[in-house]
Image (tube, rainbow, N blue to C red; front, side, top):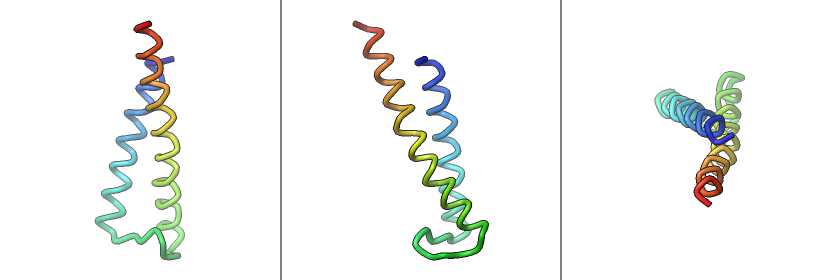
Amino acid sequence: MQKIATKVFICASVLFGILGIFMAMSGIDPDNNGSTLQQIVGKLFLSTIFVILPSFALSIAGKYLKSK
């Protein structure tokens, strides 16, 4: 379980970074209703946050529980 959570965390973090760089380079404003592509990228960017946080928590919890 810990290995899966760690892999998901790494993949989501990389995707978060790529989407963040894309948003910064293209000037996408998350508060502005732009084109469909901008809305999709914004939603993907926010969804990676909701994947990163639980997978990070599972990874840390797995390490903590394994050491006890």
